[in-house]
Length: 537
Image 1 (cartoon, rainbow, N blue to C red):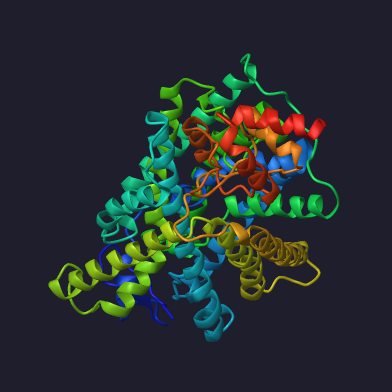
Image 2: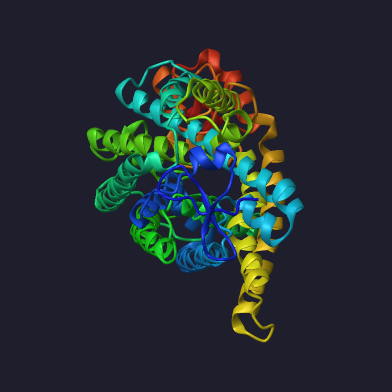
């Protein structure tokens, strides 16, 4: 348990019964990583980086599963609930701070409010797993962004995805040595600017394409039937909920210099000003421009038949902004891991920059980056696994526990609106968490046959070159794509097109039929025409 209020330096304090500040010994994780030196503005930078990231580019795809009304309503409701939830956490933290027990970590909150076992065996491991999983997922996303940029400049390039994951991970070895969460304030300010930049570019690009002659036919009908449509709705809600997810609110508030009362609220206002301006603009413009053809990342819709629908320099610039912002997200979600590393291997009685503490920090932080990079390169389908973790982790941390913490701490009357409102939100979130977990397991089972270590999987997609779409329709295949090996009759240009798409699942009949006719075909177009003729016979 941490019952302290660090001052602007490294010397922690706690309040005695007489109100006099008294020194309290802390572990090195709190002393070195969670230094309380920041302002409410710095808090806003950290909050924005933790919430607003490239994941928002998937919001138009969530609209595909919900439609206009459902999408806008869900996006608005989740914004209101998360803003409310994060404020509840801040109020609970402020309350304990005023009692002389400042809680600096999520596990400390669970320890003090629910009991030691909850902090040690549930909340602590859950938060650590989610945050480190986010580091792995963002490392993979960074590699995908690098490969997209590479293919824009060299369409026939043959470098594999794992090469770019390793390239992305290399500079992270250096940046991961930033000593404290507070030391990221300037990086996270740039992150705030970058997320505004790539969101503005994405919105402008979608509007440009929507009004261009090459604009796709706009169909806003909700996709899927029966059980698939039901799972699609829950999947969309999970996408939106996890996009708003944070999971490190206590650690962010811990960076604020005492007294903290009211500062977190100002930081949240800064954050949600950015959230509203980016989330809604990207979601609405993307879905308006592409309808139910919106892909897992809306930037994928900016390419058609291997050619960008916007100026190539504009698409390159947008992806560079996205790539740079991902770096800040990785560093932010690495902080809970850094806290654990410092707590286990550093000596709080020695200076933070002494050889005794610098060497373990260098070794184990580097090791954490190496492991994350290796897992991202090995498991390019990690998004499926992360969806399961998100259902079990993000929703409990951001939607369920804040309601429980508030009700247990302040004990509002069971006849009050706030008690039943919190209980209702927690109950609904629990149901969503369970259904989301089931949907995630279902998706893992469906995709399991495409899993392969170090696969050259790239970007999630539903929209393919027209000749590939025709081939799919012949055999009722809804998605097509390959890992490393393409059908032999695909020319290099077509392989490049497919390389811009993620782990699609090709029905085996498509691959078999394609390979049967491959020796006599000069191009995929010829193969498609032949298959069409065979089907018409």
